[in-house]
Structure formats: C-alpha cells, structure tokens
Amino acid sequence: MAERPGECQFSTPRPNRADAPVAARNGVGGDQTNGLGTIDRQDNEPDRGGTAVNQAAHDAVEKAWTLTVKVRALCPHASDSAVGMSSYESPDWYRQRKAVYFVKPDQPLKQNDVREINDMGTFVNRSFVVAMAAILEAFDIVPYKQNPDRSKAGGDHAQLTKWLRNRFAHGDWEFDAGNKDHVQTLDLQNRLFPSSAATGLGFAISIDTILEPLKDGVLEYIRACA
Image (cartoon, rainbow, N blue to C red; front, side, top):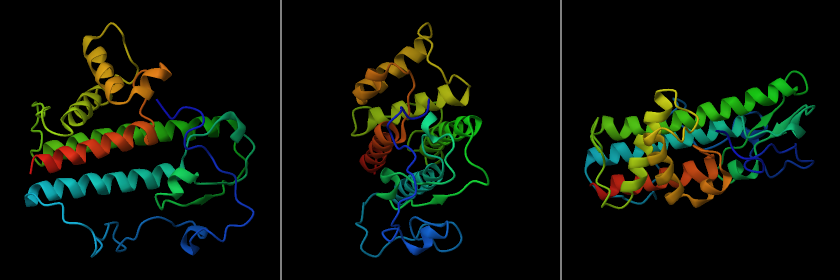
C-alpha cells in the first residue's frame, strides 16, 4: 500500500531554486558519499555503544534507510493531479532529510506514468521492510525463525518488522481478515501506529508515518540488545 493522498506528494518545480544544493540541481542530491555508494560517518556522530556486531547491524539499517529515502525522493506519492506535469521536485519531507532531486521526464506524465510511480514507491517501501528484517537475522539480533524479546525497548517494532516481512515476502500484500496471521500483524501495527488504523487500508506502510518510526524502533531494539 502506497502513501495516502497528501503524504510526501509531488512538488512542482520552485520558481527560485536557490535553496537547493548545486549538486541537487544537477540531478544528484542527498547525504555525502565516498563515491562508492557507502555513507561516511561524521566525526561528531555520537557513540552508540554496544558490541561491534550490534554497531554493524545499526549502521546497516541506517544505510538501508538512507538509500530508501533517496530512491523514494525520486518517486514520491503522486495523485491524479500529477498527470500532465513535465517536471517535479522531491517534496519537503524528503528535502528535510537531504534527499533533493529535480526530475524531468522525456514527456509530460500520463495516467499510467503516475500509476507506475506509485507502484515503484510501494515496491521500495516493502523492500525496506524485507531488508530490515534480513539485517536483524543476518547479525543475529533476531535469529531466523525466532522472535525478538518484546520486553526490550523496540521489541514490538522488531516483531512487526518480521511479521510484515513474512507477509510481503510471500506475496500477502493485501490484508485478509480471515487470516489469523494477518489479523495479528495488523493489530500490532495499529497499536504501534494508530494513524494506520484510521485509514482502513490494511498493511499501509507510508514512509513518513509508518516506516520512519518503525525504523527508529528497530534501531532502539538493536541498541537495547547490546
């Protein structure tokens, strides 16, 4: 399920783009990289403590999130009003996270283009959930076929990540009220993120209201396991 209308939507090009970094105006934007696709740690970044394994898992989740935000900045949620647009910029939510792009398709957007952009966004959102669950397992934070310690800070977020991964990895993208595993997953999601319950959209995984706080909870769990 992609973002609901009104969330992280297209921005039309700004008349004065002086506030955008020079690199962003040339089609490249976002956090600093070393040219090899890796994110360089800043000298003033706080020490999170914990074991080297937990630190590596923490860094892997952060890098996956950074890349997810960058990709989604190129394919934000688009409503029907985007049809006919000849260019667009990353919405403010992405710009605030240093993912700033100016996109100019070869031709003005058609209805099918808008649909595909939203499908791309949904695919990226689901892929981030799958990647985050894989990181938890790869670093034995939550071993394969085991559940997290939900008494720890962020434990419910780690559990929801694994349950959502199980849904998406097996093609269960739409909520089925007759499936007890779906009901269990959605109940936890709605408890952690009440805004998702109000939409009635089932496994809604909007990047701003669901994925970002889900990621924050998983990072908290990784630190709690150190």
